[in-house]
Image (cartoon, rainbow, N blue to C red; front, side, top):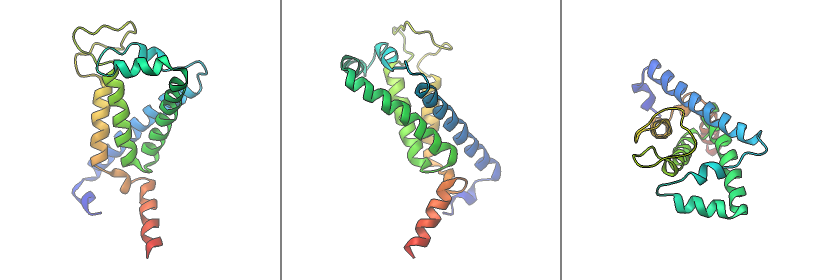
Length: 164
């Protein structure tokens, strides 16, 4: 792929650093949920007050669905994080991670008139760190750094060599 030649080393380094840092954040969020035996997304979902409120109420209302949602959320965060950190299927991880973060955002957006009982770490209006991180993951998906720095280099080269 020749696109990387238009990126400077500094640009590539910054993009890879961003990929790694967001990967670490998502990985650790998943790991902390995995290591907390009483963790459940029910508290977060019960705060949903916008377009996904009905879906959140449905998930909370069915213990099996909630258990599946918790499992997918925990392991999804871990897998997305690892993919971003090591650069393996990083583009897919970035797209899926952005989608997951948008689901978080759409459940509890910082909009005027919506009040939540769980305190935020800051004061937001429309734009939150969750939305910024989701958009950044879309950016990382369209600038596929793992094809130059990451395990995707090995995966792509193996596939090329194996097909010849």
